Amino acid sequence: MSDLVLVLNSGSSSIKYQLLHADTAEVLASGLVEKIGETQGGRITHECGDRELVHDGPIPDHRAGLRQAFEMFRETGLDLTTVGVGAVGHRVVHGGEVFWEPTLITDDVVRTIRELSVLAPLHNPANVIGIESTRELLPGIPQVAVFDTGFFHSLPEAARTYAIDAKVAAAHGIRKYGFHGTSHQYVSEKAAEFLGRPSSELNQIVFHLGNGASASAIAGGVAIDTTMGLTPLEGLVMGTRPGDLDPGIMPHLIHVAGLDLKQVEQLLNRDSGIKGLSGVNDFRELQQLIDGGDAAAELAYDVYIHRLRRYLGAYLVELGAVDDIVFTAGVGENSAAVRADALAGLSGFGIEIDPARNETRAPGVRRISPDGARVAVLVVPTNEELAIARAANDLVTAS
Image (tube, rainbow, N blue to C red; front, side):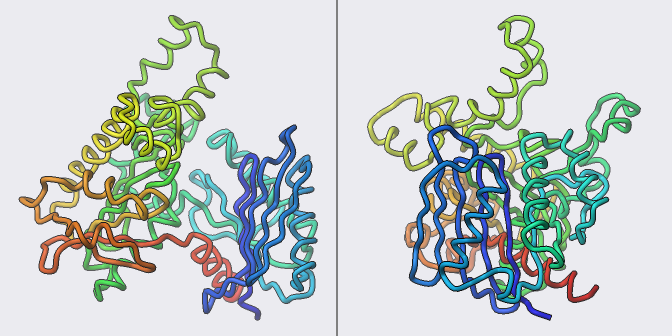
C-alpha cells in the first residue's frame, strides 16, 4: 500500500493541492489554482522540486482547473494516474452531526456532504465539486473526506448548545460545530511533543490566526470549547468576517438599513472584519497603514486584539489552569506584535513572552516564553495537508 497521498482543498474560487508521502512528510509537488470562474482569467502555480510552472488563462470551473493542474503534474514527471497515489484526501469544511471522523468517500457520502451545504453554503458545494472532479480523473483510487468540524465533535453539551428554541435548533441542526479542527488538533499535538508530555496531561489554548481565525480550549487532548459556531462567522475578528455580533444587527440591517439577505451575507462574509474597519484584510498592509498613522487601521488592530484577549480570559477560566498557549497560521506564526499584544500584562497568570524570542523567526516549533515561565507560549507552524494525508492514509491502510 503506497503512502503517497494527494491532498485537495477546494474553495469557492480556488484549489490548493499537495502531493506528499504521509509517512515521511516529504512533499513531491504542490500548487494553487486561483480565480476560478473569474472573467479576468485565472492562474495556476505548480511547484515540483526546484521547478515552478505557471499557467495563466481562463479557468471556467473547478474541473477545468484540476485537469490543467494534472497536466502540470505530468509535465514535471509525476503522472498522477501512474505515479502510485494510494489515496486522495479532501478537506471538507462541514460534517454536521453526520460526519466527524475521516470517512471513505462513496456516492452516498458525496450526497450527504452536498445536503450539508445548507450549513456551509460558501464551502461544501466547492468541496463536493473537488471530490467529484477527482473521482472522475482518478477512478479506482480511494478518496477520503477529512472534516474541519471533526475535532470539535466532542464539545460538551453546554458549550455547543445555543439558547434558542430547542425544537427549532434540533430540526435544523443549529449548534456550535467549530472549524479549523484539523489545524487545532495538529498543532496541539505538536506542542505536546515539543514539551515532551502526553496531550492527556495538558490544558492548552490554541489561536489559529489567519484570514480566518479561531481559538480553542483543549483539556487532555479533547476540545472543550472553540470560537467558531454553526458557521465560520462566530468568534474572533477575521480578515473579512466580523466574529461575534449582536444577533439584532441582522434584522436591523434588513428593516432599517434596507439591505436584502444577499447583501447582508456579502457584508458578513466578505466586507467585515479587518477589511470592514480598515479597507484592507492583509495584516501586512494593515501594519503599513498603522505605521503611516492611519487611525482606522489602528482601531481595527485594537478591536482584533481586544477580541483575542476576551477569549483568552474565557478559556483560562474554563480550563482552570493552562500549560501552554499556541499561536499558528499566517498571522499567528508571523506577527510578533499580535502575539505580544494579545498576552501583554498577564504575568500574574504565569503568562509571559520573551521579547527577543518573540521577534526571532525560525522554522519549526519554537518557544517564545522565558525559561521557567509557568505557561509555555509556543509558535507551532500548522500543516493541515500533512494531517489530512495521514488521516487518509491511515483509514485506507486499515480498510
